[in-house]
Amino acid sequence: MDMLKVIIADDEAPARSKMRRMLGKFDNVEIVAEAEDGIQALDLIQQHNPDVVFLDIEMPGLHGIEVAENVGQMINPPLVVFATAYNEHAIKAFEISAIDYLLKPVSEERLETTIEKLSSFPRKQLVAGQAERIEHLEHDEHFKLPFSNKIPVPTHDRYKLIDYADVVCIEVEERNTILYTTEKAYVLNQPLDYFEKKLPGELFLRVNRSCLVGLQHVKEIVIWFGNRFKIVLDSGKDVVASREKSRILKQVLKF
Image 1 (cartoon, rainbow, N blue to C red):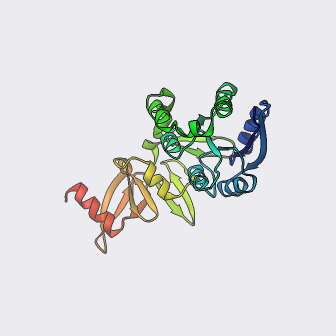
Image 2: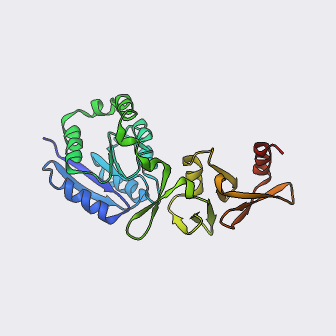
Image 3: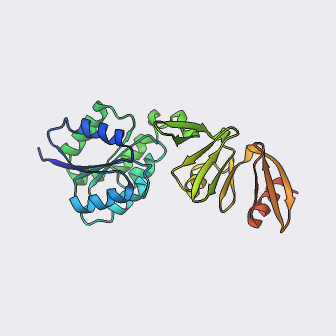
């Protein structure tokens, strides 16, 4: 059985440690490097030319999907396995030729299935199975979890899950992305563009370059100068919409 050279990329040290421990039980796996962010992952992949890279999705520097897309441009790219707590990226992952998608917490049995797959089938056969994996995924109950309407917010030792309904707004302040609920504010790892794409348009509207508003928390819309609106939220916070977004609001509200 050929040895598999592996790189682990995850921004959380405990997650890297757990994956290293589980992979260490396989005689045909050699861990050649570990990365704690997306940029470092890409550098290490170029340096070590591994057979397989186990990628987290939400990482600083480069998103795991972005790392995989860059890796796909290499002459001899490694096989990519995602290991993440986020189920919503699975179809995109397989579209860019991921071989497997592991949901955290990853069990040893599930990881064993992945290693067997990587060890038993030729590379061309593994890469050719994307369509079948996507079709299977669309009917897999594991990827229809209730977490699909929650935003995972990192704290010092865990993730707090915030319901979409509790999000008053998400705003960029001094280069930080801040999520506001009626009770508390949280610093997020992702840029505002990420949440504009991720969150449903019927519930959220980006009202200017730096603020995404939860529409169900809009208390008042005040006519403002310069053909704009000031949006007053039920938390007491207010934000001024751009002229373009003010026109959209006027159309939606039909006044």
